[in-house]
Image: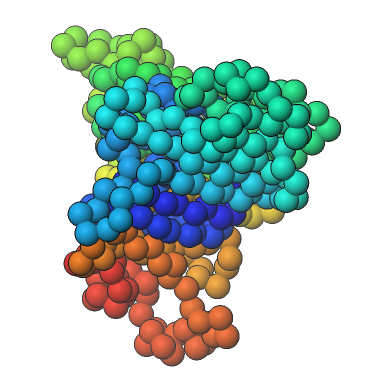
Length: 416
């Protein structure tokens, strides 16, 4: 997993140094920079491959003219480069400096450095590229192509590099939207096993349900426990995936070749089969999360922007608790179920109530803007190092974290 990330000169983040856990939640006002943090991670992931629009789009990074990715504060010294410095498990370190200008079609590499246990593996500068200290032809890699993508396959006998970077390379930011979840819209750049905005949900869930019905699957009960999230709103009892059915969906509505159907447990037989087009938006969002947690081809490191999308407060807390369990508990790790690391944003105060601030795997960050310069400030919400849980309860007067956010006791969380 990604342990640390230093960001310099990226959008509204002039300088930030972050240490992550397995589940990381970013809260703050609209426009504070929460999504920008997710995108900085996405840019580091893309840099392993290339910095083209396609590489960024596949990771859910919002596309702009290359120069717009670089910080430009009116009262601050102008920075030439975007800097990203990541530290991973296993002693893996990868840092990159990217340059962009009005004439550039994409950001270009200025420097790159990959190391294992502080020993250089790949180095890149304006003078050329070295791999295991051996010089490569200066023009052997294009200005928008990453050195890991070019030379990673030739680096032998260090499987830890492949393990860490191959997983991180698949990082993506998911932001499900109703039209895509209902199947009436399609994404311009589809991703597998599910679209970043929810395109392809029926096919992804079909694979998940198939695994649950496979009697040779030794993890069926663990996976069924995660599937229970779909029923949390209380109205549905069964999920199926089938062909478009004109008897349940208007002929004016096209929901794709495959359609998700849910059974409403309160309705009469024969009138209780609802397509995704007629189903609850919140339930479809839960279906999406279940597919992302359970599909065997889903990324092991990913982000969800607005994890509380369309959910009421109770369901939001329930969902976050399930994501935390699946991402951190040994029983899921041992059976290779679910993600290794998750990054989330939320505007719902009850999302905080799922977290244990004394558990290093679970981290909450408050993202805000400096009142004068406008630069992004990111502060981890945590107890004092020497506090016990009793000390925390005493200091907060027993308030839930959601109450503290609403009442303005979390500095910066409500904005300027």
